[in-house]
Amino acid sequence: MEFKLMPGGAIAGEVRVPGDKSISHRCIMLGALAEGTTRVSGFLEGADALATVAAFREMGVQIEGPDNGKVIIHGVGMWGLKAPRAALDLGNSGTSIRLLSGLLAGQLFDTELTGDTSLRGRPMGRVIDPLSLMGADIQGQEGGRPPLKIAGGRPLRGIHYDLPMASAQVKSCVLLAGLYSEGRTSITEPAATRDHTERMLRGFGYEVISDNGVISLAGGGGLLATNIDVPADISSAAFFLVAASIAPGSDLLLTHVGINPTRTGVLNILRLMGADITIRNEREVGGEPVADIRVRYAPLKGIEIPEEQVPLAIDEFPILFIAAACAEGRTVLRGAKELRVKESDRIAAMAEGLDTIGVVNEVLDDGIVIEGGTLGGGVIHTHHDHRIAMSFAIAALRAEREISILDCDHVATSFPGFDALARGLGLQISTLAD
Ligand code: S3P
Image 1 (cartoon, rainbow, N blue to C red):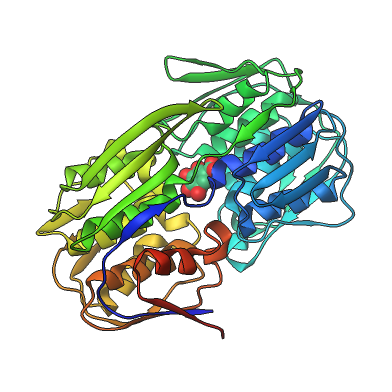
Image 2 (cartoon, helix red, strand yellow):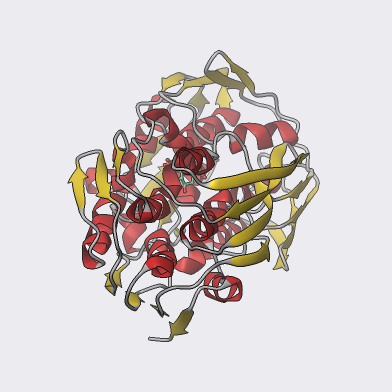
């Protein structure tokens, strides 16, 4: 699938973007292990979350839906999963493989976890290391890449783990293994990362203590089914926050967006750049803060992105680079090496695309420098990365010529229907089948 974009346009209207990817994964995992029936609404029907659904079905969990965002999970209890018949294929999803490796390390049966070409190139040593310390038997391929082979029936023990990198996936992996471990498991992080696992465990009645930067839980407890309303994903909303900010004449209302403070770096960074963003109707839904966000066009200026914002906006940098390209002056990002091990090397992939459309940039080991200016056009390669594809689609609003984006199938991993929704709001996008 290919996107073709005519230059120019403005963004207007009101929209609820699809459900949060991180929360959608977690409600399947915890719902499956709970006692009782968990009902979910607002579930993300994207390929990544569906890979998690398929994995749990394969392990004997009855899951109804998704149907219009509604999912019903018939929990089997902490020890009710069954051995899958074959390797679990988690597609493109880093969250699935890393969280599942923790959860499966504590089971009585063996499993093998694999994925697509992109996932098979991503580092898993970051989960193999702490799980091995806990007593798990987990082996990767050369360089700690998937497929991962996990031998069941190994008793796990709680550990204290100082996370070497700011990663919610690794934190969550260790916490999920901690559920099956003897004693307490505790974690410190170099910087706060998304805390959806901790919040949702509490929602399922499991005690998780967060005290002075130390997150801990005791193994051996159980989960009680609950109902979950998944907020719209701020990472998907981010494309339209930038779209409306860069396109003159835009005025957009994004409704029911998750504004968990561990995810709002994109709002903080855009505001520092001069964006006109208003938060309304703040409320709490199922333990997660949610709000409506109004964004209107405003001229942006280049900034030095504060490093403490990096983990809070980690998935939003591709689209923030487009904001930087449209801003007046220079934007500098540092301390963002993690971008190199996402669905693609996002620093390299974005720099290549920015070069194509004539935006001056300098790649750093752990970031990038972008000079705001005029955007041309050209042909973009996504490197199989959904967020690279959507970012350059939004860039067309300020481009002088047509932009073609090759290989856009992966957009459906996190944002099914992006093209139709974007067209409805004013982007001049057409989709071509291969
Ligand atoms: C996620 C954590 C982040 C993020 C990913 C989803 C999660 O990854 O990039 O899209 O759901 O825990 P890291 O924890 O590896 O930074």
